[in-house]
Each structure stands twice: as structure tokens, then as C-alpha cells.
Length: 51
Image (tube, rainbow, N blue to C red):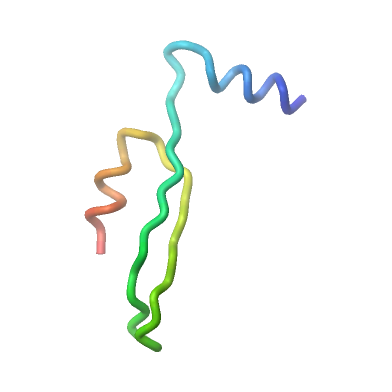
């Protein structure tokens, strides 16, 4: 089943995904926290601009 899912994501005209890792400072402890997520390529700029 996994091979079929991966193959269908690589079809032409499908959405492309990007893994984004954002580093933020925790307000509670002051240490850096890494938030990662898998997004569509068109929404990456919005995710990085958000505070």
C-alpha cells in the first residue's frame, strides 16, 4: 500500500510538500524550541512569517 501512496503523490499536477523546521524562543523558559511540520509548498512563506 505504501508504494501506491508515494507513487500517487509524485504524479504530475499533484501538490508538492515541503518539510519546514522553524526555530522559536520559548516564552516560558527562554530556550529555543523547534517546530516542524509538513506543508504544501505554497503555504511555506505564511508559516515562516507567522509569529
